Amino acid sequence: MDSLEILRNLAIIVIAAKFFGLLARRLKAPQVAGEIVAGLIIGPTLLNIVPLSEFFFQMAEIGVVLLMFSAGLETDIDNLKKSGVKATILACAGVGMPLLLGTILYMCFYGFAAPGSAEFIKALFIGTILTATSVSITVQALRELGKISTEVGTTIMSAAIIDDVIGIVVLTAVIGLKDPSANIGLVCVKTVLFFAFSIVLGIIIFKIMKKLDAMWPHTRRIPIIGLALALVFSYIADKYFGVADITGAYVAGIILSSLDDSGYIDRKMDINSYMIFGPIFFASVGLQTNLRSVDTTIIAFSLAFVVVGLVSKIVGCGLVAKILGYNKSDSLKIGVGMMTRGEVALIVAQRGLKAEIIDSEYFTAVILLIIISSILTPIVMKAIYASDAKKANS
Picture 1 (cartoon, one colour):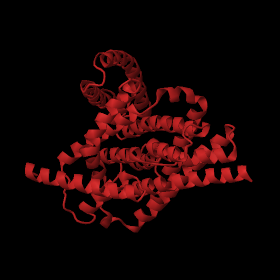
Picture 2 (cartoon, rainbow, N blue to C red):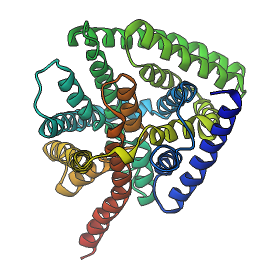
Picture 3 (cartoon, rainbow, N blue to C red):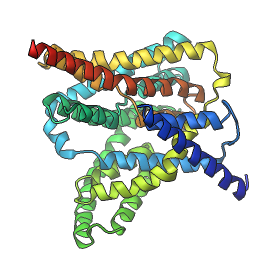
Picture 4 (tube, rainbow, N blue to C red):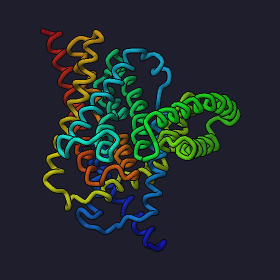
């Protein structure tokens, strides 16, 4: 593919992704859903006018790193500290139940496999995709209901953040199992070493960045240094620890999240992500998915995947919340609030595709889960709060 074709294809992707993204937002659906649909339309599923190339895969990779760096920047460390044991237990349930049920779901469709085999790792990865909770969608739903600062809202937020951290660790471990020479013990040790390394180096970097931020407040050089840090941590994580590069980007964001200018850095990163790298990544998901080749088994699996994805979060987090002392209504709110999936689920699925653990046909199930959970969550949450208000007034 020559440079002129690349320019043409880039223009098509950006225009299509933004058009369908804005259309989705107007229809009260997540903008990311529209960008995925754009990829489906211009890709092999429908028009087939934009062929995938190594260049676009590399651009999508940068998009993933930027997205996870921004997710780290948006992490509130104080909320993590205040959330305490309850949020951590809820997060563990929010990861454990979907991981277990997702693994069993795959085996029910494609046969039970011996632990350590390629099929078992594939089943485990399907469960891993289900572990992610979309913090951004949950935040928006709570904000629209005016409940983000309540005890339930804070618990959901804290648990969702911890949920993603645990989910990324699980992702790293499962991808590590793909290597025949690797074992779960070694993967866990290397993961722990990476986080220990990140904590020590992170404290030093934060102190340096805090001084630089005070010296050059609200200047472009701070986001530039932040971006370089994200790229370096991504490289170190993958190259020297065998940890997914997106984990390194996420950690880099967390390191800088307490800076006075963390929001400024995030806004600058968002410009690049919003204009080009984000659309390319989400559209690439659609471009890699060919619905023409989807058979009835995948359709049935996708529907079951959506049901298990929703139920596993509601049951897992809801039951644990009840055990922890929340009343029935609040437990249901927590379960429903944790069931949304978004960009992290897509990123996890994309990492599985890159590592050759799953095939692109499984993106159909992930896309369905994101769209349905994103639409259902605000509706169900609103209905629960309305029911509570009605009982209180009666």
